[in-house]
Length: 388
Image 1 (cartoon, rainbow, N blue to C red):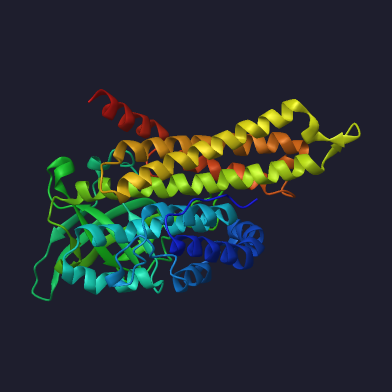
Image 2: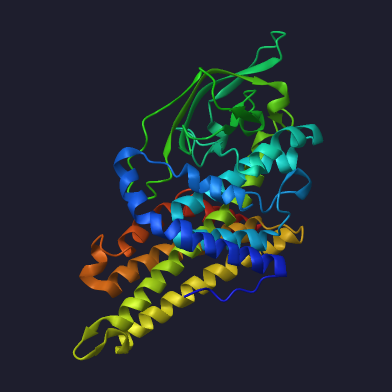
């Protein structure tokens, strides 16, 4: 059932209708076969991202002067939720791509914005966000990937060496927004770079064999002296931690919106099944115990949506929203895990089979509690704000 949305503008309402049309025509008919195929052959939905890019849906929260949609986050996140309700791997990709452009939009010079954003925002390029490392996940300040000054006179200023782990779009991206160490000063020694794909010094590990989100290819990125121009360093040396943390606040809202869309689809599937499935001469929805379970699922989804929209409205108003982004990510992803679990319970044995999509929703929900900061990290962030 379509969500009854409250959008701030007519343009926002039109974007939701466009998104729903693309989801109906392009995403839902392909998702099940594509996810099954990608589990074994690493299929990647490149053309789907190109379609979204041509429709202007990869650039919504970015400035209009560089090809963005200039939409408030309140609108952008509801578009992400709609995409997630059809194909969660693609919604995660949209959120990741927006995250890769965020440092340039927010911290780049006018010259960098003019040079880099048109490709990033047109849909012609897809980005990867290279922050995590095999031994530096939640502890970003312990990363070891290093950008060393070369200054050899040919325009190349740095050579990056190290490994990044759990990188979405790795091997398929056109550029890698990369965080690397430029000094040994802990978290104050990190810098941000936009690294174009195609260097012979960049290679990739084998795709991770994941329990879900098979069309979201994830693998290691290996930098073996990858050359980077001075013009591709975003911000000052040592500013990388501030850039990363700022970007993650926005990225957490993207995951919260995606998790909400995933939970909404699980609820819709469970409600439809409960109205059709007959036992003892009546639909199982007529049983109060099951009806109350569906009511709790609806409350969880609605609460998740309200949480991410509140954080988005704070961001749009230019007010601090770090705590609220962490709250939204925590609530929405925990809700997704619970709602998808309960959806399987409503369908009973049928829910445990691949004949219905709720088992896929369940597998996809779990990782939302882990990436963009585990939910334990979200609780740490929230508690620090509360006790400040």
